[in-house]
Length: 108
Image (cartoon, rainbow, N blue to C red; front, side, top):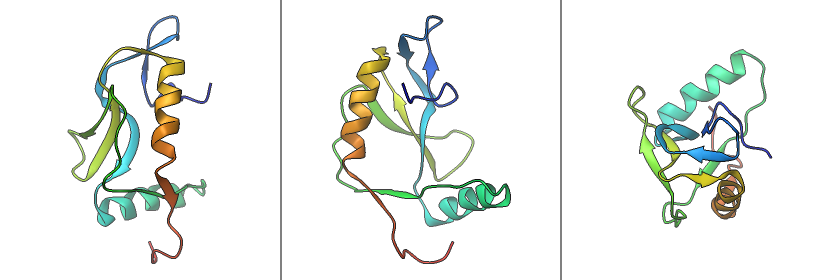
């Protein structure tokens, strides 16, 4: 259904997403972190989409931005309560309405 197993913690039957504060969609809090992440992908010649989240975005209940414990400047949009995969998809769609692709934001 479009949710990657490596991004979120699934239940054994893959019907539920389980809370985990160190898993979720990746976001950079700083330009330096974003340049590092982009550099990792560009070396592997894999395409990467770069997005910007508006600072005053309302995050749906059950989701929270959590700092990566191993990488300063990197955050996860983590799940904080058990929810069905369909519920996560609906919540991520709400977040996606507030995303926009960076156009001409400078060189990475």
